[in-house]
Length: 239
View 1 (cartoon, rainbow, N blue to C red):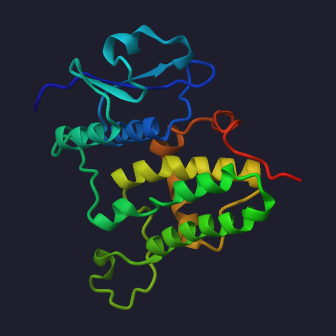
View 2 (view 1 turned 60 degrees about the horizontal axis):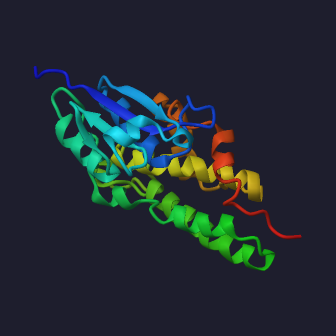
Protein backbone atom coordinates (compact mmCIF):
# COMPACT_ATOMS: atom_id res chain seq x y z
CA UNK A 1 0.00 0.00 0.00
CA UNK A 2 1.34 3.40 -0.94
CA UNK A 3 1.96 6.14 1.59
CA UNK A 4 -1.15 8.12 2.54
CA UNK A 5 -1.04 11.49 0.78
CA UNK A 6 -1.39 14.81 2.60
CA UNK A 7 -4.44 16.54 1.15
CA UNK A 8 -5.94 19.91 2.02
CA UNK A 9 -8.86 21.43 0.15
CA UNK A 10 -9.39 25.19 0.40
CA UNK A 11 -12.97 26.32 -0.21
CA UNK A 12 -14.84 29.60 -0.06
CA UNK A 13 -16.09 30.45 3.43
CA UNK A 14 -19.61 31.55 4.26
CA UNK A 15 -20.51 34.93 5.72
CA UNK A 16 -19.66 33.59 9.20
CA UNK A 17 -16.13 32.90 7.87
CA UNK A 18 -16.26 29.30 9.11
CA UNK A 19 -18.96 27.32 7.27
CA UNK A 20 -18.84 26.37 3.60
CA UNK A 21 -19.86 29.23 1.32
CA UNK A 22 -21.83 29.26 -1.92
CA UNK A 23 -19.50 27.89 -4.59
CA UNK A 24 -20.53 24.94 -6.77
CA UNK A 25 -16.91 24.37 -7.80
CA UNK A 26 -15.84 24.08 -4.16
CA UNK A 27 -18.69 21.68 -3.42
CA UNK A 28 -17.82 19.62 -6.48
CA UNK A 29 -14.28 18.93 -5.21
CA UNK A 30 -15.50 18.46 -1.62
CA UNK A 31 -17.87 15.75 -2.87
CA UNK A 32 -15.18 14.05 -4.92
CA UNK A 33 -12.77 13.77 -1.99
CA UNK A 34 -15.56 12.49 0.27
CA UNK A 35 -16.64 9.90 -2.30
CA UNK A 36 -13.05 8.81 -2.78
CA UNK A 37 -12.86 8.06 0.93
CA UNK A 38 -9.60 9.99 1.17
CA UNK A 39 -8.31 11.53 4.37
CA UNK A 40 -8.21 15.27 3.81
CA UNK A 41 -8.37 18.58 5.64
CA UNK A 42 -11.03 21.11 4.66
CA UNK A 43 -10.08 24.76 5.11
CA UNK A 44 -12.58 27.58 4.57
CA UNK A 45 -11.15 30.81 3.18
CA UNK A 46 -12.71 34.15 4.16
CA UNK A 47 -12.26 36.19 0.99
CA UNK A 48 -13.09 39.49 2.72
CA UNK A 49 -9.97 39.28 4.83
CA UNK A 50 -7.56 38.52 1.96
CA UNK A 51 -5.99 35.68 3.98
CA UNK A 52 -2.27 35.08 3.93
CA UNK A 53 -2.84 31.55 2.71
CA UNK A 54 -4.03 32.93 -0.63
CA UNK A 55 -1.04 35.22 -0.99
CA UNK A 56 1.37 32.47 -0.05
CA UNK A 57 -0.04 29.36 -1.72
CA UNK A 58 -2.13 30.64 -4.61
CA UNK A 59 -1.56 34.34 -5.34
CA UNK A 60 -4.27 35.75 -7.55
CA UNK A 61 -6.43 32.63 -7.24
CA UNK A 62 -9.92 32.12 -5.92
CA UNK A 63 -11.01 28.98 -4.06
CA UNK A 64 -11.21 26.13 -4.60
CA UNK A 65 -7.60 25.07 -4.67
CA UNK A 66 -5.86 21.94 -3.51
CA UNK A 67 -2.67 21.31 -1.57
CA UNK A 68 -1.52 17.78 -2.35
CA UNK A 69 1.74 16.76 -0.70
CA UNK A 70 2.78 20.45 -0.70
CA UNK A 71 1.96 20.77 -4.43
CA UNK A 72 -0.63 23.51 -5.11
CA UNK A 73 -3.29 23.02 -7.78
CA UNK A 74 -5.76 25.79 -8.66
CA UNK A 75 -7.82 24.76 -11.73
CA UNK A 76 -11.03 22.91 -10.80
CA UNK A 77 -11.16 20.71 -13.90
CA UNK A 78 -7.48 19.82 -13.62
CA UNK A 79 -7.88 19.08 -9.91
CA UNK A 80 -10.75 16.72 -10.72
CA UNK A 81 -8.66 14.94 -13.36
CA UNK A 82 -5.69 14.75 -11.00
CA UNK A 83 -7.73 13.27 -8.15
CA UNK A 84 -9.34 10.69 -10.45
CA UNK A 85 -5.94 9.62 -11.79
CA UNK A 86 -4.07 9.74 -8.49
CA UNK A 87 -6.66 8.43 -6.04
CA UNK A 88 -7.29 5.35 -8.11
CA UNK A 89 -8.25 1.69 -7.59
CA UNK A 90 -7.67 -0.52 -5.77
CA UNK A 91 -7.25 1.86 -2.83
CA UNK A 92 -9.83 4.41 -3.99
CA UNK A 93 -13.02 4.04 -6.06
CA UNK A 94 -13.24 5.09 -9.68
CA UNK A 95 -15.72 7.96 -10.15
CA UNK A 96 -15.56 8.64 -13.90
CA UNK A 97 -18.67 7.91 -15.93
CA UNK A 98 -19.32 4.67 -17.76
CA UNK A 99 -21.18 6.58 -20.47
CA UNK A 100 -19.81 9.80 -21.97
CA UNK A 101 -23.35 11.17 -22.40
CA UNK A 102 -23.70 11.37 -18.62
CA UNK A 103 -20.95 13.98 -18.46
CA UNK A 104 -22.99 16.48 -20.48
CA UNK A 105 -26.39 15.79 -18.97
CA UNK A 106 -27.89 19.00 -17.61
CA UNK A 107 -24.99 21.16 -18.74
CA UNK A 108 -27.30 23.80 -20.23
CA UNK A 109 -29.49 24.23 -17.14
CA UNK A 110 -27.37 26.79 -15.29
CA UNK A 111 -27.13 29.06 -18.33
CA UNK A 112 -30.90 29.22 -18.87
CA UNK A 113 -31.46 29.51 -15.12
CA UNK A 114 -29.15 32.54 -14.98
CA UNK A 115 -31.01 34.32 -17.80
CA UNK A 116 -34.35 33.50 -16.15
CA UNK A 117 -33.42 34.68 -12.68
CA UNK A 118 -31.60 37.87 -13.76
CA UNK A 119 -34.57 39.17 -15.73
CA UNK A 120 -36.86 41.75 -14.09
CA UNK A 121 -39.11 42.37 -17.13
CA UNK A 122 -42.47 40.57 -16.71
CA UNK A 123 -42.92 40.58 -20.47
CA UNK A 124 -39.90 38.32 -20.94
CA UNK A 125 -40.53 36.04 -17.96
CA UNK A 126 -42.73 33.46 -19.69
CA UNK A 127 -40.31 33.01 -22.58
CA UNK A 128 -37.27 32.71 -20.31
CA UNK A 129 -39.09 30.32 -17.98
CA UNK A 130 -40.03 28.07 -20.91
CA UNK A 131 -36.40 27.95 -22.07
CA UNK A 132 -35.26 27.14 -18.54
CA UNK A 133 -37.97 24.52 -18.11
CA UNK A 134 -37.01 22.90 -21.42
CA UNK A 135 -33.53 22.20 -20.07
CA UNK A 136 -35.03 20.54 -16.99
CA UNK A 137 -37.26 18.43 -19.26
CA UNK A 138 -34.21 17.44 -21.30
CA UNK A 139 -32.39 16.28 -18.15
CA UNK A 140 -35.50 14.42 -17.01
CA UNK A 141 -35.60 12.60 -20.37
CA UNK A 142 -31.97 11.52 -19.95
CA UNK A 143 -32.65 10.24 -16.45
CA UNK A 144 -35.72 8.27 -17.49
CA UNK A 145 -34.05 6.71 -20.55
CA UNK A 146 -32.52 3.33 -19.68
CA UNK A 147 -28.74 3.12 -20.00
CA UNK A 148 -27.34 0.24 -22.09
CA UNK A 149 -26.50 -1.92 -19.07
CA UNK A 150 -30.07 -1.54 -17.80
CA UNK A 151 -31.30 -3.12 -21.03
CA UNK A 152 -29.12 -6.21 -20.72
CA UNK A 153 -31.57 -9.08 -20.60
CA UNK A 154 -34.45 -6.61 -20.27
CA UNK A 155 -35.21 -5.54 -23.81
CA UNK A 156 -38.69 -4.39 -22.77
CA UNK A 157 -37.41 -1.92 -20.16
CA UNK A 158 -38.88 1.44 -21.18
CA UNK A 159 -38.02 3.60 -18.16
CA UNK A 160 -34.81 3.74 -16.15
CA UNK A 161 -34.92 3.20 -12.40
CA UNK A 162 -31.32 4.25 -11.76
CA UNK A 163 -30.57 6.57 -8.85
CA UNK A 164 -28.05 8.91 -10.46
CA UNK A 165 -26.83 10.18 -13.83
CA UNK A 166 -24.63 7.24 -14.78
CA UNK A 167 -26.06 4.45 -12.65
CA UNK A 168 -26.76 3.70 -9.00
CA UNK A 169 -23.59 5.30 -7.63
CA UNK A 170 -22.55 8.95 -7.61
CA UNK A 171 -20.05 9.89 -10.31
CA UNK A 172 -17.94 12.88 -11.32
CA UNK A 173 -20.87 14.04 -13.45
CA UNK A 174 -23.12 14.15 -10.37
CA UNK A 175 -20.48 16.07 -8.42
CA UNK A 176 -20.55 18.69 -11.16
CA UNK A 177 -24.32 18.92 -11.68
CA UNK A 178 -25.87 18.49 -8.23
CA UNK A 179 -24.33 21.59 -6.59
CA UNK A 180 -25.76 23.68 -9.43
CA UNK A 181 -29.19 22.06 -9.18
CA UNK A 182 -29.26 22.84 -5.46
CA UNK A 183 -28.62 26.52 -6.22
CA UNK A 184 -31.31 26.46 -8.91
CA UNK A 185 -33.86 24.96 -6.53
CA UNK A 186 -33.20 27.45 -3.73
CA UNK A 187 -32.99 30.62 -5.86
CA UNK A 188 -35.97 29.87 -8.12
CA UNK A 189 -38.18 29.19 -5.12
CA UNK A 190 -37.25 32.48 -3.49
CA UNK A 191 -37.31 34.86 -6.47
CA UNK A 192 -39.92 33.23 -8.75
CA UNK A 193 -41.96 30.95 -6.50
CA UNK A 194 -40.86 28.24 -8.95
CA UNK A 195 -40.51 24.62 -7.87
CA UNK A 196 -39.10 21.89 -10.08
CA UNK A 197 -42.29 20.26 -11.43
CA UNK A 198 -43.11 16.96 -9.73
CA UNK A 199 -44.30 15.53 -13.04
CA UNK A 200 -40.63 15.47 -14.02
CA UNK A 201 -40.55 12.21 -12.10
CA UNK A 202 -37.05 11.06 -13.06
CA UNK A 203 -35.51 14.41 -12.07
CA UNK A 204 -37.53 14.43 -8.84
CA UNK A 205 -36.28 10.92 -8.07
CA UNK A 206 -32.71 11.94 -8.86
CA UNK A 207 -32.77 14.90 -6.47
CA UNK A 208 -34.51 12.87 -3.76
CA UNK A 209 -31.81 10.19 -3.96
CA UNK A 210 -29.07 12.83 -3.94
CA UNK A 211 -30.32 14.56 -0.80
CA UNK A 212 -30.26 11.21 0.99
CA UNK A 213 -26.52 10.99 0.48
CA UNK A 214 -24.25 12.58 3.08
CA UNK A 215 -21.65 13.37 0.41
CA UNK A 216 -24.11 15.76 -1.18
CA UNK A 217 -26.38 16.90 1.64
CA UNK A 218 -23.56 17.71 4.06
CA UNK A 219 -21.47 19.56 1.49
CA UNK A 220 -24.28 21.94 0.49
CA UNK A 221 -24.08 25.52 1.76
CA UNK A 222 -26.98 26.76 3.87
CA UNK A 223 -29.90 28.09 1.82
CA UNK A 224 -29.42 31.50 3.41
CA UNK A 225 -25.84 31.55 2.14
CA UNK A 226 -27.01 30.86 -1.42
CA UNK A 227 -29.66 33.57 -1.24
CA UNK A 228 -27.13 36.05 0.11
CA UNK A 229 -24.86 35.33 -2.85
CA UNK A 230 -27.75 35.99 -5.23
CA UNK A 231 -29.07 39.04 -3.43
CA UNK A 232 -27.73 41.44 -6.04
CA UNK A 233 -27.80 39.00 -8.96
CA UNK A 234 -31.33 37.60 -9.01
CA UNK A 235 -34.14 40.04 -9.76
CA UNK A 236 -37.76 40.08 -8.67
CA UNK A 237 -40.12 40.83 -11.52
CA UNK A 238 -41.13 44.50 -11.80
CA UNK A 239 -44.76 45.14 -10.86
